[in-house]
Length: 157
Image (tube, rainbow, N blue to C red; front, side, top):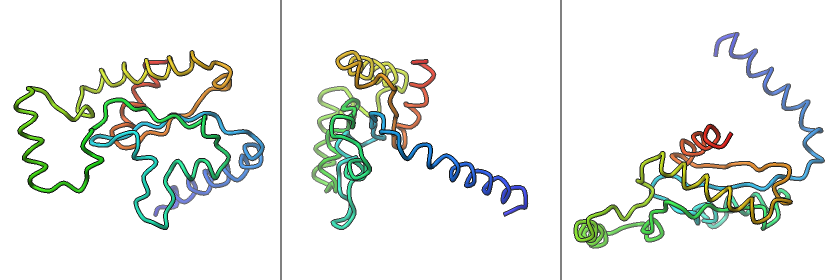
């Protein structure tokens, strides 16, 4: 690592160490979770390993209330819950796609349509309980979901 990079890393770490006491007494804002391509809203609740908590469990253990964690159940791949696939399952999925003439994996929907859909979902959620979102909210988005959330920030501001 170059000398310049070392300075940047030290500045970032120093800044975070200064801000930690400021944020330590702040209640967490509600958080929207959005999955990546080929996934679904339940992925944030999945335990990859028996000894490792899910992401939602980590949020709850760090002060987030159940109501403040909102999974966005849009543009999901309904078959990601069946993983791992076997050859028969893949063959059946491809056959269904050909028969129905459309993509069953909604996470492959064009990104701008996903941005519009997620934006509408967030606005409706906030409208149902404006007091809960009076201090704003945070987005946690995985993989392609991060691209869509980047578009959301531009689209909703």
